[in-house]
Amino acid sequence: MSEQQLTGRLYGVGLGPGDPSLMTVRAVEVIAGADVIAYHSARHGRSIARSIAAGHLRADHIEEALVYPVTTESTDHPGGYRGALDEFYETAAARLATHLDAGRTVAVISEGDPLFYGSYQHMHKRLAHRYPTEVIPGVTSISAAAARLGKPLAEADEVLTILPGTLPEEELTARLASTDTAVVMKLGRTFPTVRRAMARSGRLPEAHYVERATMSGERTERLADIDAETVPYFSVTVVPSRIADVPVTETAAAAATGSATATASAAATATASEPSGLGEAVSSPGPGEVVVVGTGPAGPLWLTPESRGALAAADDLVGYTTYLDRVPLRPGQRRHASDNKVESERAELALDLARRGRRVAVVSGGDPGIFAMATAVLEVACQSPYRAIPVRVLPGVTAANAAAARAGAPLGHDYAVISLSDRLKPWEVIAERLHAAAGADLALALYNPGSRSRTWQVGKARELLLEHRAPDTPVILARDIGGSEESVRTVRLADLDPHQVDMRTLLIVGSSQTQAVRRDNGTEVVWTPRRYPEG
Image (cartoon, rainbow, N blue to C red; front, side, top):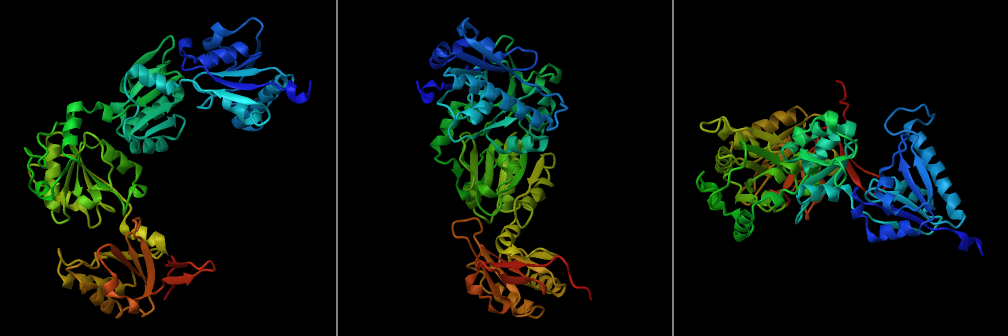
């Protein structure tokens, strides 16, 4: 018999979440046909995997107990905790390789699924390229937890995020805030951190706790009610589907209105009793609030985790149609769209909805506090009868920051942000501020430079700036940053053509120190040095 024929076969066998009856038929077949059964355990010697498969083990099975040298305790290994584990995995793989080289079939059994946070995967990485290998999938603890709770994990376009509780609290908080549904594993001593992250991300009221799903001692409760001292490692936290919690009648009603988006006139004139013509709104449990959300200059790539979470959690979305279209449709949410000239009406609508217990997200482009909706909402919120309604403002990536990043670093030193629109302030004020900023040698980010009804402001601004700046001062024309028609060009201030500027364009005008340099790869970068010359 050749050496190749003597080579044994390696199996990674998933046993499911704990109940032996949830083992797959294939898992039982492989265990029955194996010569060697290998399983991991802590130093106490008890193996959950072995206890699940115990009813299928034979007296003539060769058992290989792979005992971890450390679990969560410290170690004096010269390579530290990771070094101790790596050495253990190498030794364990060598033990299994001895059986495989002798022609024996080795089944490494693993609770849950072998390649989902499973101990088997460390053997797989070291042996699968050397021996014939088959992995038998198993029911995960996540699926078992959802089944025991009787709550769907994800529906339609919802995103399920699976997180280890060992992540830093800030990272957990950000990821929980930005996802639709979530499962946090590996609790135990990480539980206090996980609970704080749930609270900080606003997900605690939705969260459920499942301990030893399908096993003896199973427990399910609301996460907020759990005593941290009672939490074992084999437990998970589930933030289930929001869509699944929406009553079928409400989902159907929203579907009947198409995209559930109100017309501009309805949004501008809606009252508390008639929220954008969508009929009677169902109040949320608990107090309402308004969150003004900055979506950045374009689509989802520019959203912060906090903003993404606020948009997903809202009962109602209020905003300019162009910005609302950036937000995914979610069953149960109501959308109140309008044009871009009814800021006060939008703010009042949002606050009226919140006064009735709704969670409202006012959607704003860029950063809501820079020439956007935060001011409009706060102006109305400071009036009676809205002063008691909670209002939060979530920042977004500004158009100026996005444009500057595409060009290089033109705003690397002091700069000023000025809107060229004279719809809300006289041109004389704009001109005075341009003179002051240019005279102080500040780089400039110029918002709202032109539109169909405003065609002369860019030319006037160019003339004014040339009184203070050299003709070859770099000017960046950044249009539709992050969008399908994105373009970034750099021209001399003297060559700035007003006809090439529209409302989707942002202008960045350099200071006297700003450099435009063409690099060896053909790209041009614009940057303003952080060091300013003395004298």
